[in-house]
Length: 386
Image (tube, rainbow, N blue to C red; front, side, top):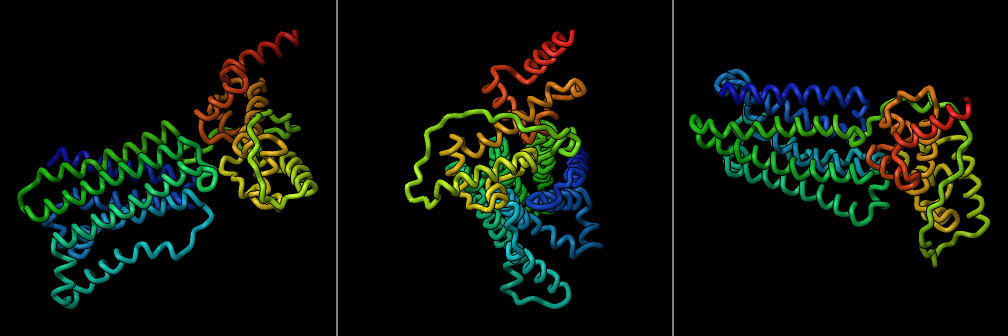
C-alpha cells in the first residue's frame, strides 16, 4: 500500500507540474483547456485514492460518491480536445452538452443525500454493474469518435488538420489510444474494488497507470515541445525586418480546377495582395497560421487561393509557407550574433512548429543540415572579411 501511495502521489504532483507548465506556456485557451481539465480529473481521482476510504465515507461522503463517476468525464474531455485541436476557432457553448450525463448523475447523487431517490433510479446510479456499463459506454463511444476524427485527418489533412504536422497527428492518435486503455482499466479496477471491499487491495495497482500516463505526456512535452505549440527563442518582434528572399521553386503537377469561377484578373490580384501580405505581415512566422486565415486576409475564398498557389506558383499551401519559413531560417542561421543560438530555436523563430519537419525540409532543399549550413556560411563570410 505504501508503494501504491508513493507512486500515485508522484503522479499527482507531476500532473500539477504539467498543468502549470501548460498554463505558463499560455496553452489554457482553445483545445488545451480540455486537456487541463482532463489532468485535473486525474489529479482528483489520484488524490481520493491515496486518502483513507473509511475517512472519506465518514467525512466527505458526497465527494466520495462523486468519485465513482469521475471516469465519466474522461471521454467527453478527450473528444473535445481532439475536436477543437482540429478547429481551434469553432468552439460553441453547445459543446458543453457532452457533460450533461455526468451533470445529471451528480445532481441525482446530491439529491439522494437529502431525499430518497426512486428505487429504479437509485439502482441504476448506485449499483456497481449499471454504473460500470454507463462509464464504459461513455469511454468507448467518445474515444472511438475521437479516433474517427483522426482517420478523417489522415485521409484529407488539408481540409481538417491543415496546420498540424505528422508529429501532431501521431501524438494525438497515441494520446487517444493510451487514454482509452488507461481509463477503461481504471473503470474496471474501481468496479473490482467496490464489489470485493474490504478485500481486493491488489486492484489498486491499476491506478498507477494514471501516473505512468501523466509521465508519458510530460515526457512528450519535453522531448517534442512542438506538439504543444511551444515557441522557444526570440519572438517575432525581436527579429530584424528584412526584405523577403526569393521563394523556392517546387514543381508539382497542377490540380485541375475545371469548375472554378476564378478569372485571370482575379488570380493576378490575389498574387499581388499575397506579395504585399508577405512583405508587410510576415504571417509565416506564426506556426498556427492556416490557409483559411490567409484566404481571409486576402479577401478571397480558400478554393481560389489554393488554385492560385497551385497554378501560378506551382506550390501547395504547405510548400509555399515552408519555403518562406526556410528562407527566414537561412537568414537567421548566418547572423553572427546568433552563432550560439540553438538550431531548434532558429526553427521555431522561423515559424516551424516541429524540429523534425524543419530538419527534413532544410536538408531536402539545401543538401545540408542546418548545422552544416551555418558553419559553411559563417566560414565563407569570415574568409571574405579577411
